[in-house]
Length: 381
Image 1 (tube, helix red, strand yellow):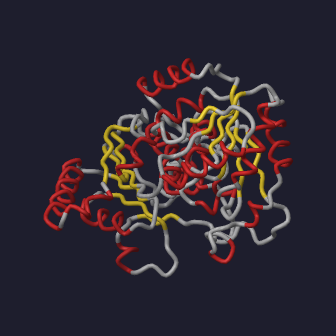
Image 2: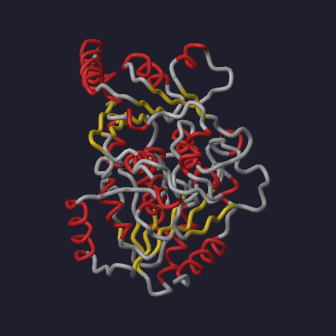
Image 3: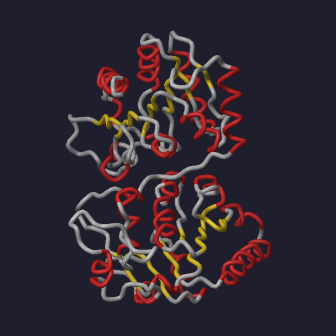
Protein backbone atom coordinates (compact mmCIF):
# COMPACT_ATOMS: atom_id res chain seq x y z
CA UNK A 1 0.00 0.00 0.00
CA UNK A 2 1.44 3.42 -0.88
CA UNK A 3 2.48 5.70 1.98
CA UNK A 4 -0.14 8.24 1.00
CA UNK A 5 -3.05 5.78 0.88
CA UNK A 6 -5.93 6.71 3.18
CA UNK A 7 -6.50 4.68 6.31
CA UNK A 8 -8.80 1.68 6.08
CA UNK A 9 -12.41 2.78 6.35
CA UNK A 10 -14.83 1.43 8.92
CA UNK A 11 -16.73 -0.36 6.14
CA UNK A 12 -13.63 -2.42 5.39
CA UNK A 13 -13.15 -1.07 1.86
CA UNK A 14 -9.72 -1.21 0.29
CA UNK A 15 -8.24 2.33 0.31
CA UNK A 16 -7.18 2.08 -3.34
CA UNK A 17 -10.72 1.15 -4.29
CA UNK A 18 -12.02 4.11 -2.27
CA UNK A 19 -9.77 6.49 -4.21
CA UNK A 20 -10.84 4.95 -7.49
CA UNK A 21 -14.47 5.67 -6.57
CA UNK A 22 -13.72 9.39 -6.92
CA UNK A 23 -13.73 9.87 -10.69
CA UNK A 24 -11.56 12.99 -10.55
CA UNK A 25 -9.41 12.13 -7.54
CA UNK A 26 -6.19 14.12 -7.39
CA UNK A 27 -3.02 12.10 -8.04
CA UNK A 28 -1.17 12.57 -4.80
CA UNK A 29 2.21 11.82 -6.34
CA UNK A 30 1.80 15.03 -8.37
CA UNK A 31 1.51 17.22 -5.27
CA UNK A 32 4.71 18.86 -4.07
CA UNK A 33 3.37 22.07 -2.52
CA UNK A 34 -0.08 22.68 -1.05
CA UNK A 35 -1.67 25.93 0.17
CA UNK A 36 -4.54 25.79 2.70
CA UNK A 37 -6.51 29.05 3.08
CA UNK A 38 -8.56 29.79 6.20
CA UNK A 39 -9.47 33.44 6.65
CA UNK A 40 -11.68 33.35 9.71
CA UNK A 41 -11.49 33.82 13.48
CA UNK A 42 -9.22 32.03 15.96
CA UNK A 43 -11.44 29.06 16.78
CA UNK A 44 -12.27 28.44 13.13
CA UNK A 45 -8.57 28.41 12.30
CA UNK A 46 -7.74 25.92 15.03
CA UNK A 47 -10.49 23.62 13.73
CA UNK A 48 -8.54 23.56 10.45
CA UNK A 49 -5.54 21.86 12.08
CA UNK A 50 -6.68 18.28 11.23
CA UNK A 51 -6.71 19.20 7.53
CA UNK A 52 -2.98 19.94 7.76
CA UNK A 53 -2.31 16.72 9.66
CA UNK A 54 -4.21 14.61 7.15
CA UNK A 55 -2.47 16.21 4.17
CA UNK A 56 0.97 15.58 5.68
CA UNK A 57 0.08 12.02 6.65
CA UNK A 58 -1.16 11.17 3.15
CA UNK A 59 1.41 13.22 1.21
CA UNK A 60 4.46 13.11 3.51
CA UNK A 61 6.85 14.40 0.83
CA UNK A 62 4.77 17.52 0.13
CA UNK A 63 5.30 20.96 1.68
CA UNK A 64 2.10 22.26 3.30
CA UNK A 65 1.60 26.03 3.70
CA UNK A 66 -1.25 28.01 5.26
CA UNK A 67 -2.65 31.47 4.55
CA UNK A 68 -4.26 33.07 7.62
CA UNK A 69 -5.06 36.42 9.14
CA UNK A 70 -2.03 37.57 11.11
CA UNK A 71 -3.80 37.68 14.48
CA UNK A 72 -4.93 34.04 14.11
CA UNK A 73 -1.52 32.68 13.09
CA UNK A 74 -0.59 31.49 16.64
CA UNK A 75 -3.30 28.84 16.32
CA UNK A 76 -1.28 26.99 13.67
CA UNK A 77 2.17 28.58 13.69
CA UNK A 78 3.97 25.59 15.24
CA UNK A 79 1.87 22.86 13.64
CA UNK A 80 4.36 20.10 12.75
CA UNK A 81 2.81 19.60 9.30
CA UNK A 82 3.40 23.18 8.17
CA UNK A 83 6.31 24.37 6.08
CA UNK A 84 5.35 28.06 5.92
CA UNK A 85 2.63 30.33 7.31
CA UNK A 86 1.65 33.34 5.21
CA UNK A 87 -0.42 36.06 6.83
CA UNK A 88 -2.70 38.95 5.99
CA UNK A 89 -2.70 41.86 8.41
CA UNK A 90 -6.21 43.30 8.74
CA UNK A 91 -4.51 46.60 9.60
CA UNK A 92 -3.11 46.98 6.10
CA UNK A 93 -6.19 48.95 5.12
CA UNK A 94 -5.24 51.69 7.55
CA UNK A 95 -1.81 52.18 5.97
CA UNK A 96 -3.03 54.17 3.00
CA UNK A 97 -3.56 53.00 -0.55
CA UNK A 98 0.10 52.72 -1.63
CA UNK A 99 1.32 50.92 1.49
CA UNK A 100 -1.67 48.62 1.41
CA UNK A 101 -1.11 47.68 -2.22
CA UNK A 102 2.62 47.16 -1.57
CA UNK A 103 1.85 44.75 1.28
CA UNK A 104 -0.68 42.87 -0.86
CA UNK A 105 1.79 42.62 -3.76
CA UNK A 106 4.56 41.33 -1.50
CA UNK A 107 2.23 38.64 -0.16
CA UNK A 108 1.10 37.64 -3.65
CA UNK A 109 4.71 37.49 -4.85
CA UNK A 110 5.66 35.16 -2.00
CA UNK A 111 2.69 32.91 -2.70
CA UNK A 112 3.33 32.84 -6.44
CA UNK A 113 6.97 31.94 -5.89
CA UNK A 114 5.89 28.80 -4.03
CA UNK A 115 4.32 27.34 -7.23
CA UNK A 116 1.54 25.39 -5.53
CA UNK A 117 0.17 22.22 -7.07
CA UNK A 118 -2.94 22.15 -4.85
CA UNK A 119 -4.93 24.97 -3.27
CA UNK A 120 -7.52 24.14 -0.58
CA UNK A 121 -9.91 26.99 0.22
CA UNK A 122 -12.01 26.35 3.34
CA UNK A 123 -14.38 29.32 3.42
CA UNK A 124 -16.47 31.39 1.05
CA UNK A 125 -14.06 34.33 1.28
CA UNK A 126 -13.63 35.82 -2.23
CA UNK A 127 -9.86 36.17 -1.77
CA UNK A 128 -9.50 32.41 -1.94
CA UNK A 129 -11.28 32.29 -5.29
CA UNK A 130 -9.17 35.15 -6.63
CA UNK A 131 -5.95 33.43 -5.54
CA UNK A 132 -7.19 30.20 -7.05
CA UNK A 133 -7.28 31.96 -10.42
CA UNK A 134 -4.08 33.95 -9.93
CA UNK A 135 -1.68 31.36 -8.49
CA UNK A 136 -2.22 28.82 -11.25
CA UNK A 137 -2.36 25.68 -9.11
CA UNK A 138 -3.28 22.63 -11.17
CA UNK A 139 -5.79 21.46 -8.56
CA UNK A 140 -8.02 23.89 -6.65
CA UNK A 141 -10.64 22.88 -4.09
CA UNK A 142 -13.34 25.17 -2.72
CA UNK A 143 -16.82 24.97 -1.19
CA UNK A 144 -19.85 24.61 -3.40
CA UNK A 145 -22.10 27.62 -2.90
CA UNK A 146 -25.77 27.51 -3.86
CA UNK A 147 -26.42 30.17 -6.45
CA UNK A 148 -22.72 30.96 -6.81
CA UNK A 149 -21.57 32.98 -9.79
CA UNK A 150 -19.86 31.37 -12.72
CA UNK A 151 -16.66 33.16 -11.65
CA UNK A 152 -16.77 31.29 -8.32
CA UNK A 153 -17.48 27.94 -9.94
CA UNK A 154 -14.71 28.42 -12.48
CA UNK A 155 -12.25 29.31 -9.72
CA UNK A 156 -11.93 25.68 -8.64
CA UNK A 157 -11.24 22.36 -10.29
CA UNK A 158 -13.15 20.60 -7.48
CA UNK A 159 -16.10 21.89 -5.46
CA UNK A 160 -16.89 20.07 -2.24
CA UNK A 161 -20.46 19.84 -1.01
CA UNK A 162 -21.64 21.00 2.40
CA UNK A 163 -24.67 19.16 3.80
CA UNK A 164 -27.80 21.26 3.63
CA UNK A 165 -30.03 21.24 6.69
CA UNK A 166 -28.00 18.59 8.53
CA UNK A 167 -25.69 19.93 11.25
CA UNK A 168 -22.19 18.49 11.18
CA UNK A 169 -19.08 19.36 13.13
CA UNK A 170 -16.91 22.01 11.52
CA UNK A 171 -13.86 19.71 11.61
CA UNK A 172 -15.67 17.19 9.43
CA UNK A 173 -16.89 19.91 7.07
CA UNK A 174 -13.29 21.07 6.66
CA UNK A 175 -12.18 17.51 5.97
CA UNK A 176 -14.83 17.22 3.27
CA UNK A 177 -12.55 19.34 1.08
CA UNK A 178 -10.02 16.50 1.19
CA UNK A 179 -12.59 13.75 0.78
CA UNK A 180 -13.72 15.46 -2.41
CA UNK A 181 -10.30 14.87 -4.00
CA UNK A 182 -9.95 11.29 -2.77
CA UNK A 183 -8.13 11.78 0.55
CA UNK A 184 -10.11 10.05 3.29
CA UNK A 185 -8.87 10.68 6.87
CA UNK A 186 -8.52 7.84 9.32
CA UNK A 187 -10.10 8.05 12.76
CA UNK A 188 -6.71 8.67 14.37
CA UNK A 189 -5.91 11.64 12.11
CA UNK A 190 -8.68 14.06 13.09
CA UNK A 191 -7.54 15.46 16.41
CA UNK A 192 -6.89 19.15 16.89
CA UNK A 193 -3.24 20.19 16.99
CA UNK A 194 -1.93 23.24 18.83
CA UNK A 195 1.71 23.49 19.89
CA UNK A 196 2.29 26.26 22.47
CA UNK A 197 6.07 26.24 22.18
CA UNK A 198 8.85 26.33 24.78
CA UNK A 199 8.42 29.99 25.70
CA UNK A 200 4.70 29.62 26.41
CA UNK A 201 5.29 26.41 28.38
CA UNK A 202 7.88 28.18 30.53
CA UNK A 203 5.51 31.10 31.17
CA UNK A 204 2.76 28.71 32.25
CA UNK A 205 5.10 26.95 34.66
CA UNK A 206 6.18 30.30 36.09
CA UNK A 207 2.57 31.38 36.61
CA UNK A 208 1.75 28.16 38.42
CA UNK A 209 4.67 28.72 40.79
CA UNK A 210 3.78 32.39 41.29
CA UNK A 211 0.18 31.65 42.23
CA UNK A 212 0.73 28.40 44.13
CA UNK A 213 -1.11 26.28 41.58
CA UNK A 214 -0.58 22.57 41.02
CA UNK A 215 -1.18 20.90 37.66
CA UNK A 216 -4.50 19.11 37.72
CA UNK A 217 -5.64 20.94 40.87
CA UNK A 218 -7.29 23.99 39.36
CA UNK A 219 -10.21 24.76 37.05
CA UNK A 220 -9.71 27.13 34.14
CA UNK A 221 -12.74 29.43 33.86
CA UNK A 222 -12.98 31.51 30.68
CA UNK A 223 -16.42 33.14 30.83
CA UNK A 224 -16.05 35.87 28.21
CA UNK A 225 -16.20 36.01 24.44
CA UNK A 226 -15.73 38.70 21.83
CA UNK A 227 -19.40 37.98 21.10
CA UNK A 228 -21.05 39.00 24.36
CA UNK A 229 -24.37 37.44 23.34
CA UNK A 230 -22.63 34.07 23.85
CA UNK A 231 -21.85 34.84 27.50
CA UNK A 232 -23.39 33.59 30.73
CA UNK A 233 -24.23 36.31 33.32
CA UNK A 234 -21.42 37.46 35.62
CA UNK A 235 -23.36 36.65 38.80
CA UNK A 236 -23.78 33.03 37.70
CA UNK A 237 -20.07 32.72 36.98
CA UNK A 238 -19.35 34.11 40.44
CA UNK A 239 -21.62 31.52 42.06
CA UNK A 240 -20.04 28.76 39.98
CA UNK A 241 -16.55 29.81 41.10
CA UNK A 242 -17.68 29.50 44.71
CA UNK A 243 -19.12 26.02 44.14
CA UNK A 244 -15.91 24.84 42.46
CA UNK A 245 -13.78 26.24 45.28
CA UNK A 246 -15.85 24.25 47.78
CA UNK A 247 -14.68 21.10 46.02
CA UNK A 248 -11.12 21.96 47.03
CA UNK A 249 -10.03 23.18 43.61
CA UNK A 250 -8.62 26.60 42.81
CA UNK A 251 -10.19 28.71 40.09
CA UNK A 252 -8.14 30.53 37.44
CA UNK A 253 -10.06 33.05 35.36
CA UNK A 254 -8.88 34.37 31.99
CA UNK A 255 -10.08 36.64 29.21
CA UNK A 256 -8.79 38.52 26.20
CA UNK A 257 -7.34 42.02 26.78
CA UNK A 258 -10.54 43.52 25.35
CA UNK A 259 -11.96 46.16 27.71
CA UNK A 260 -15.46 44.69 27.64
CA UNK A 261 -14.19 41.24 28.54
CA UNK A 262 -12.03 42.66 31.33
CA UNK A 263 -15.07 44.53 32.67
CA UNK A 264 -17.01 41.28 32.80
CA UNK A 265 -14.19 39.62 34.75
CA UNK A 266 -14.17 42.56 37.17
CA UNK A 267 -17.89 42.03 37.76
CA UNK A 268 -17.34 38.34 38.47
CA UNK A 269 -14.51 39.03 40.93
CA UNK A 270 -16.57 41.67 42.70
CA UNK A 271 -19.47 39.23 43.14
CA UNK A 272 -17.56 36.10 44.14
CA UNK A 273 -16.80 35.31 47.77
CA UNK A 274 -13.82 33.03 47.14
CA UNK A 275 -10.21 33.76 46.10
CA UNK A 276 -9.75 33.56 42.33
CA UNK A 277 -6.50 33.74 40.39
CA UNK A 278 -7.10 36.51 37.86
CA UNK A 279 -5.04 36.24 34.67
CA UNK A 280 -7.52 38.12 32.50
CA UNK A 281 -5.80 39.93 29.66
CA UNK A 282 -2.32 38.74 30.68
CA UNK A 283 -1.85 35.73 28.40
CA UNK A 284 -1.32 35.41 24.69
CA UNK A 285 -2.97 32.52 22.86
CA UNK A 286 -0.05 30.12 23.16
CA UNK A 287 0.34 30.88 26.87
CA UNK A 288 -3.40 30.32 27.30
CA UNK A 289 -2.99 26.91 25.66
CA UNK A 290 -0.09 25.99 27.92
CA UNK A 291 -2.07 27.05 30.98
CA UNK A 292 -5.24 25.17 30.11
CA UNK A 293 -3.20 22.05 29.37
CA UNK A 294 -2.32 22.00 33.07
CA UNK A 295 -5.88 22.48 34.31
CA UNK A 296 -8.07 19.69 35.65
CA UNK A 297 -11.04 21.11 33.79
CA UNK A 298 -12.01 23.95 31.47
CA UNK A 299 -15.33 25.78 31.87
CA UNK A 300 -16.44 28.38 29.36
CA UNK A 301 -18.72 29.40 26.54
CA UNK A 302 -18.50 28.70 22.82
CA UNK A 303 -15.23 30.50 22.08
CA UNK A 304 -11.69 29.97 20.84
CA UNK A 305 -10.41 29.09 24.37
CA UNK A 306 -12.94 26.22 24.46
CA UNK A 307 -11.42 24.83 21.24
CA UNK A 308 -7.94 25.43 22.64
CA UNK A 309 -8.83 23.34 25.70
CA UNK A 310 -10.01 20.53 23.42
CA UNK A 311 -6.77 20.73 21.43
CA UNK A 312 -4.77 20.42 24.65
CA UNK A 313 -6.82 17.41 25.81
CA UNK A 314 -8.37 19.21 28.78
CA UNK A 315 -11.92 18.05 29.66
CA UNK A 316 -14.37 20.85 28.99
CA UNK A 317 -17.76 22.05 30.21
CA UNK A 318 -19.10 24.18 27.37
CA UNK A 319 -22.09 26.51 27.68
CA UNK A 320 -24.00 26.99 24.44
CA UNK A 321 -26.71 29.47 23.57
CA UNK A 322 -27.45 30.78 20.06
CA UNK A 323 -24.65 28.82 18.38
CA UNK A 324 -24.88 25.15 17.50
CA UNK A 325 -23.04 22.68 19.70
CA UNK A 326 -23.16 19.96 17.03
CA UNK A 327 -21.16 22.17 14.68
CA UNK A 328 -18.95 23.89 17.26
CA UNK A 329 -18.77 21.70 20.37
CA UNK A 330 -15.49 20.52 21.98
CA UNK A 331 -13.84 18.11 19.56
CA UNK A 332 -12.54 14.67 20.55
CA UNK A 333 -12.14 15.41 24.24
CA UNK A 334 -14.16 14.45 27.33
CA UNK A 335 -16.80 17.14 27.65
CA UNK A 336 -20.31 18.13 28.66
CA UNK A 337 -22.38 20.61 26.69
CA UNK A 338 -24.81 22.59 28.84
CA UNK A 339 -27.62 24.21 26.86
CA UNK A 340 -31.17 25.29 27.53
CA UNK A 341 -33.95 22.72 27.20
CA UNK A 342 -36.56 25.46 27.61
CA UNK A 343 -35.85 27.29 24.37
CA UNK A 344 -36.69 25.21 21.28
CA UNK A 345 -35.58 28.18 19.15
CA UNK A 346 -31.92 27.46 19.86
CA UNK A 347 -29.57 27.30 18.12
CA UNK A 348 -30.87 30.34 16.26
CA UNK A 349 -27.55 31.84 15.18
CA UNK A 350 -28.74 35.32 16.16
CA UNK A 351 -26.71 37.88 18.10
CA UNK A 352 -29.07 37.71 21.04
CA UNK A 353 -32.84 37.37 21.09
CA UNK A 354 -34.21 39.51 18.30
CA UNK A 355 -30.67 40.74 17.66
CA UNK A 356 -30.74 42.45 21.05
CA UNK A 357 -27.28 41.18 22.21
CA UNK A 358 -28.79 39.23 25.13
CA UNK A 359 -29.57 35.52 24.80
CA UNK A 360 -32.32 34.25 27.09
CA UNK A 361 -31.27 30.65 26.45
CA UNK A 362 -28.08 31.56 28.35
CA UNK A 363 -29.36 34.07 30.91
CA UNK A 364 -31.88 31.49 32.16
CA UNK A 365 -29.38 28.62 32.34
CA UNK A 366 -29.17 27.66 36.04
CA UNK A 367 -25.92 27.34 37.95
CA UNK A 368 -27.00 23.92 39.21
CA UNK A 369 -26.95 22.42 35.73
CA UNK A 370 -23.47 23.74 34.99
CA UNK A 371 -22.18 22.55 38.33
CA UNK A 372 -23.67 19.11 37.74
CA UNK A 373 -21.71 18.90 34.50
CA UNK A 374 -18.55 19.97 36.35
CA UNK A 375 -19.04 17.22 38.94
CA UNK A 376 -19.65 14.61 36.25
CA UNK A 377 -16.43 15.39 34.45
CA UNK A 378 -14.40 15.64 37.64
CA UNK A 379 -15.63 12.13 38.52
CA UNK A 380 -14.53 10.79 35.15
CA UNK A 381 -11.18 8.95 35.32
